[in-house]
Length: 167
Image: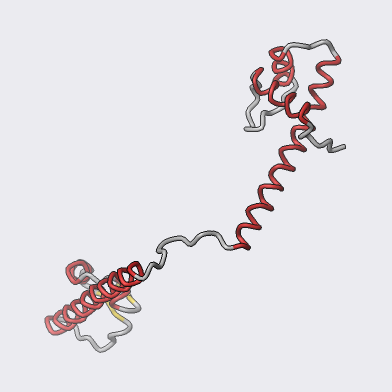
């Protein structure tokens, strides 16, 4: 037996609702909002009528919504996701700053390893990248393979003073 709280919550399409009722077999369907619907042809007739009313209601709601949106659009109301409020703009700025601090701290940690590698004699970008890989240092994207270009960007950040030492 299939127990449904409200007929119009199962479906607002009469054809689909009737296919569910007819496909439920011997146990049938019980609608809690229609507890007195009898079994048999009279019950099927009542469920069909209620399904048609639910479908009509869905169509009228859709029609009213479309009309209201059209009126709002004519009045110049901007539909869709509104532009960020000052609060969300502030939160976005704070999130960008936090991410920048995380990136700078991570760069400082990697730069410490680069300095150790350079102290051991590696001077080319390719050699430094190979040593970072050998030490298991992950790239900012979380991958183990460093490219010479990534090392160059890291050293450029250091020269620009955008890396904050974390120790």
